[in-house]
Length: 80
Image: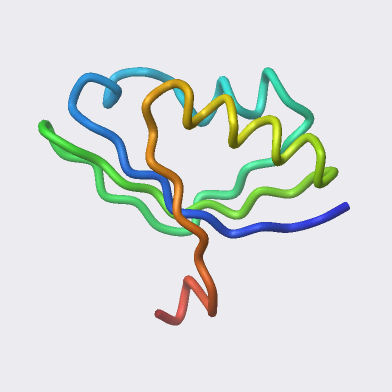
């Protein structure tokens, strides 16, 4: 099992979509939301993804194809 921290940013057209649920449901990935800010016109969420490296890679490829921008995150999310 691997753990990877990422930040998703997405536009207003994706705000109402259950993207994180779909990611965990379609792929064998456990998601842990560390921080988030969702507004009418945009949203971002910092996640810890836990699973097999291959599953995480496939899940991130899928999420990017859905229109979400993905950025790696380093450091302690909770403490800032």
